[in-house]
Length: 167
Image (cartoon, rainbow, N blue to C red; front, side, top):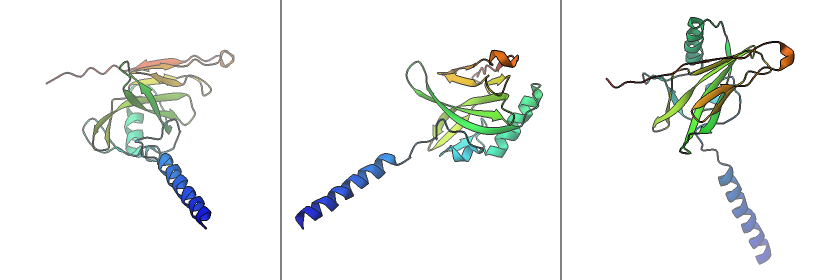
């Protein structure tokens, strides 16, 4: 009887340890593509004015900005990229990919307060081919991977540099 109680107690303790180790209390689901931001974000996202952002509002805003830049695009999937700056501080980047896979763009996310992150200005855009020209982030820099030689297409990077000034 004592062996049975010890066995059950051991299983109970191991189960609690397993469940607590697997608890997902992170702010983002990193590296997983999704049709909605809400599926990969466990925080509130706000724009530079402090207004809440949803998948549809971000798509509308970025598609309009991209049209003004000469890109006709329908944004489709989102992904959170995790990277580290020179001081080993964790950075998050919100990347979106067009429906046809030929355009990727995104912006850095910055922690504000109490489970709120600000979506910065759209920073990098890669345009080229659906099987290459992927937007990659390393620290605070973004690059585009090339297109395979057999496609005959070129990968083009557009980057916006945001200069913030004090009033």
